[in-house]
Length: 165
Image (cartoon, rainbow, N blue to C red; front, side, top):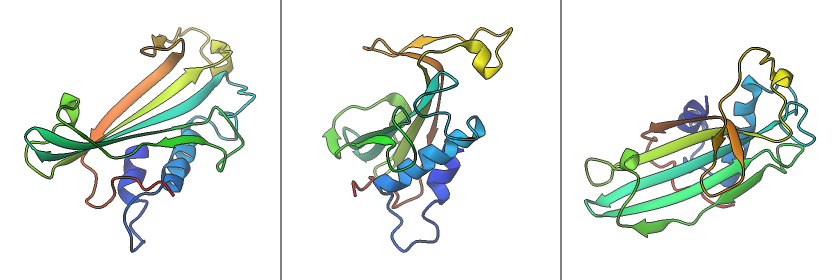
């Protein structure tokens, strides 16, 4: 759902480039497939909150890339103006994740990762009476993900990098 919103959110605008407010609104909207109210926000009645990671890479040539990392989190609340976010600056790099390497100069890739992070989690709150979710430790932290999913897409031209406004 998030990938589809990325590709279509700015269709009716003159400026196609995404803004910080766009990724916050998309992150909030993509929560509605599980959370039908504001339950992804404090006090987290289901025991989970949602984090989205946005990793954008543009190939300049075979050894030079531009990249930007951004994230949103529903740890705070209520929505959508208090959804926590970070819009990274565009950086030059000589190596990137192999999933994000383009095959020709000018290729762009976006890796979207959606995490459902546990906080005071009780599996029965989400209806998991028989299923035991597999928890994944987030690298370098003490946080656990209940579910984490990612997709790599080729964004429409002009959407990235995200403007921090």
